[in-house]
Amino acid sequence: MCYGGICWAISITATGNWSETIDASDLTAGAGSNLIDTCQSAADAVSIDIAATSGNWGLDVKKITSNWHNNLHLHIRRTSDGTGSGTISGGDSYQEVTDIDQSFFSGNGDRSNVNIQLKLTGVSIQVPPDVYTATVYYTVSDQ
Amino acid sequence: MKTLTKILLLVVLFAGLTSLAIAESDTTQSTVTITFSEIAEIAASGNPGTLTIVAPTTPGDLPADQSDASTTMAWTSNVAAGQTRKITGSLASLFDGIDLYATITAASGKGTSAGELKFTAAATDYNFVTGIGNCNTSGETITFRASVTAMVAPYTSAKVVTWTLTEDAL
Image 1 (tube, helix red, strand yellow):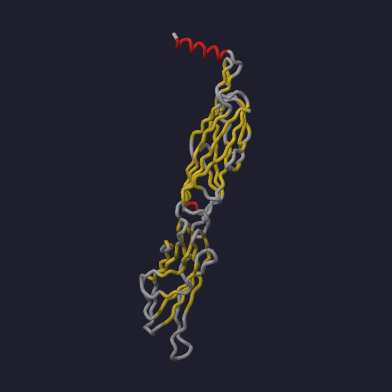
Image 2: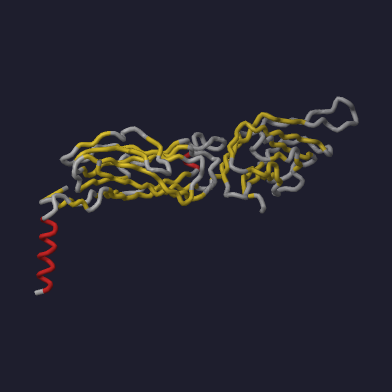
């Protein structure tokens, strides 16, 4: 966003986190059965605002884990376009979040309240009881 | 006066540029926290059939043993690294003149069956399956065997066997 030749930095804000507890209520059929393979957050678990844009931008996503299990896979998708003067596209189908930046969605102009949903796959009784944490990083860049 | 001079200089500097970008990207984050709780679920499919002791075919012998393998066991267990669970069985009270034995099978990777064990004492836990890690299984056969040890007056009695999935001793 530029006024009089001065451009403000593009900025991104994420609001919300996702916490999920897997317990016996998640068994597919009680004793003897395995856990559900997949669980997902609310459709609006995370809301993203992108502001001070100067044109086209792209958003990358990655995760950094502090305690994780190799069976677990985190996926992400965009569930709303949000609001704002600009446009937005892509990212509306689940994609796996890896440890390196990957293109998530892109747009043009400012957008607010872009809702994000997260999904965990690989859930099974093989995953030992513990607390597993991933920090998801969203990076918006001018394009 | 010196301060005013500096401010004016900065304004002139910015105005002289056609475009000044402070940064081209920005990063934010959210946190995903997944808690896997401990799970220890066990279920028997139901009650076994009645074990009916009948007269021996040869006078002087004790009645033959009677068995039932009509029920099954299912369990789901996850434990912290380095830990395991076991299935214990306990007979509430003993039968007169009859020893009761039981066996629970355990498929590969679902624990280790102890084979047939006798309920020697009442209200005492016996380890029927040990070494249960992170697994789930169903349809594991429970076999009961009643063995007459002494002739007693005819009677009918129902006893409760309690199966428990619990932590193995470390």
